[in-house]
Each structure stands twice: as C-alpha cells, then as structure tokens.
Image (cartoon, rainbow, N blue to C red):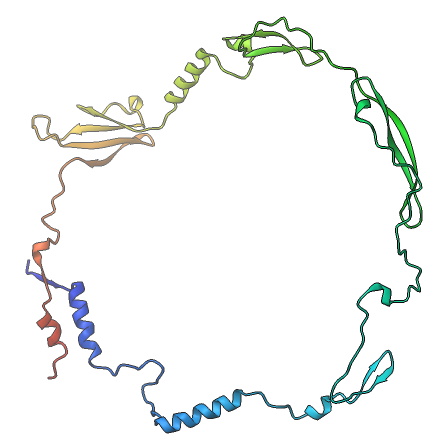
Length: 291
C-alpha cells in the first residue's frame, strides 16, 4: 500500500498564514475602504460634537416662566428675585381646631403591682380578665379574676434500679415504673421485621431469579431443552489444539445463536501509522505560488 499524505495541526497553521497574506486585513473601527481625517478637521468635529451635547434653553422656555406665587390664594410679592415663605416647624404653631389630645390623661384605675411573695406554691393572686376603654383608647375599667398557684410538687421515689434500658414502661404521670433490655424480635414486639429464615429464603429466591449472564466451557452444546438462556456456552474450535480459541453460543428464543469467537482480530487490512506521511511546509507554500 503506498504511503498517504495527511494534514497535521502544524500544516493547518502554515496554510492559514499563507492564506492571510492574500487578503487586506481590516483595521478595527474602519471599513475595508476609509478616508482618514486631518488633525485640524478632527478638532473641528470634536468642538461641534461638544457643543451639540451642551444644555440649551428650549424653544418654549418663555412659556414656562412663573409670573406670580400665591400661598393659600394670597399673592406673595417677589422682591429682588426672592420669595420668603414661612412654614410651621412645630405643632404649637398650628391651630388645634380638631381638639386633638395634647396630653395623656391620668389613669382611671389603680396600678397595683403583684408582690412576689404571693407567686409561690399554694398562693392566690388577681389577674386582669377584661378591660374597658374610652373613645380615645384609654383604659377606664379593668375586671380581674383570681388564680391559685399549684401546690409544691414532690416527685415519688423510683423503684427502678439506675441503668440503661432499651424498653421502659411509663405510668399516667409520666414516671418510669419498669425497664427491660429485650434481645429478640418477639421481645421487642416487632411484626414487620423478617426472621433469619425468611431473609435466607428471600435471598435464595432473588438469586434464583437473577438474569446475570455467566460463561461455561463445554465440549459440545447441550440439548435445547436442557440449555440455560443465562449462559454463554464456549465450544473449542479445535479440540486437539492448544490455541484456546472458542466459539460463543447462546440460547435465544428456543434456538442456539452464534455470538462470536475468541480468535484474535487480524489488523493487517487496516491502515497503520507507518503508512502515513505528514505534508511538509514546502507542500503548503507550493499551493500559494503564482504559476
């Protein structure tokens, strides 16, 4: 087979460099054809642009001129281009024509503070149950009710030996009255946990229903009725040789189908690296030479 030429990345770079010399490179910001400005003309253009961006009075500026100022309908004189308006800065400067509350009234009920002494076991004290307010939201009446503090609690003595328990019995008051350490499923009262025998049966069932393939070397294919669809059968091509080349068979839909063999693949018919020669720079440059 004659050697073949191939293009490498280096060849491609060389090709693009030659190709670039055939065209005019575009300058950023310009077209392929442009007229450059002189410094003086560019200066005039810059001055004209700055002037166009400056603030100018609109054509209707005179229509927007304020000719007089009024406060609550009363005209205010403008003297020396100055208008002096007096604005209130505190509430006392305003007239209280709505009779707004100017000071909080004194409370109409006594403020009795509960003594800490009565907040003890077995003591009683009063708390506010309902209040009445006036039109301004002020409390004018408070109804109370009496509460009684509970008696001092005494925890009963436990009859359980101190220790760690996996299962405990609790009475209606929340006290632990019994503790045990169960070790079996029955002692724990578990009904949804399988036994060891049930686990082993489930594992055996899962393994028997497994669809994983396995290989088996046989002298000849078994009868179809006795063959296993999950087995790839390897039959030696030459029983008397030591080459260990086998033909692979599988049982598919009631018949044996040949899947392939373990013989080495002959690569002589494929293209090898030695059959390729890279294109040289001279070959690339020759493409761009003038005839």
